[in-house]
Length: 313
Image 1: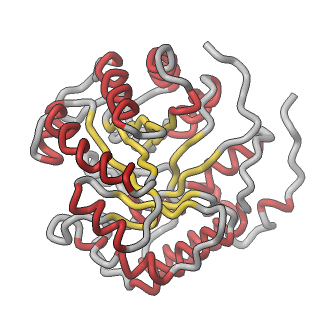
Image 2: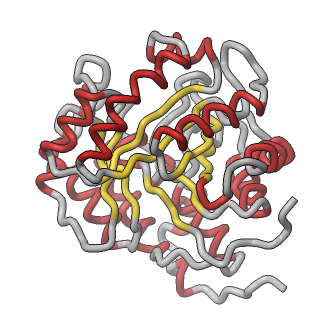
């Protein structure tokens, strides 16, 4: 197992997509554009802006094309979208999207409940999508959900996770993000999973997506760092709940991840104070409490980035 920490980490900001998609209160295109622009100004270099799925299933993502048209796209920043099928990919292409994400589940039961097909069928659906993306020079990022546990099956074999991740890469995904969708994983399990999957897949092609349902997301990210993983998903203000655990937190907050990484002396190029401000703004708009512990502790006090920090020895 790897013991050294990466010197740089790339954060994949999923708040505008994964964070907002389950909100019941309608959010205007202008407010979504403002959120993405705020996150860009904070220095984030990868932002999931929206999702090209049927508005029947995800009403909150219905205006994704308009959001892409409205944001100030800065050179060097990736503005991505979820496109689970060929129809979604075509819509993304029409909107000028340069990168999309696809997802498969590591659990047969979760795949059936979530997208009404088996794992094998879901992967087969990606074949024409991947071909179309390659024809247009579009990069595709893959997700594998429920890698550390399924709400219907419990524990998930690491062999299953590795098999699906390998298949996604062979189909053309440049990177595969392993997602603890229900947030049940622990640091030891996270290290073991990355160690197992990393035997056949380069760690430079792996990323982590951790939910904080049981308060383990930051420890799991640290465990991933110890395994040489240097790409992690996070969501501003912890937007996005866990639909499989009523009242539980969902996505790990970008602010909290940044505080951890800053304390470890790991470079991200992201301004924590600006992310806190962006999170406060969207939470005020949604009339909901901020899900970031760092943001809650910092509001009204000295700016986080101005506090003296000591690089660990």
